[in-house]
Length: 93
Image (spheres, rainbow, N blue to C red):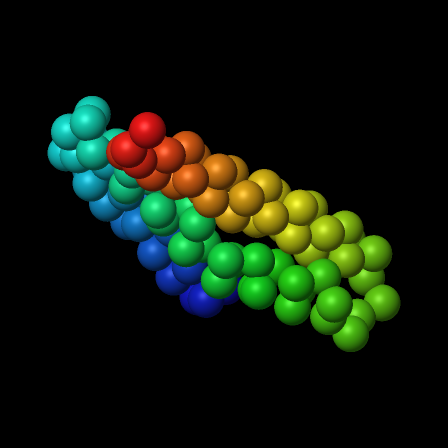
């Protein structure tokens, strides 16, 4: 139970910190910053793949792992697409 409370507290603190940081970023930098961080979030994909392939008999773990892999893949691909589109705007014609 202590671990759950500790993890929940960490989650709430990181949530407040994330909101505070994102609100301080000027709108002109928001899209480049978010596309870069989405592209870097491939680490999440590795963790999701480990969760999906865990050696357990629980179907819930496998289902949540699959959902995590799917959403992390969308996040990474979307980050690369937005970054690529932004970089194309600065190329000379």
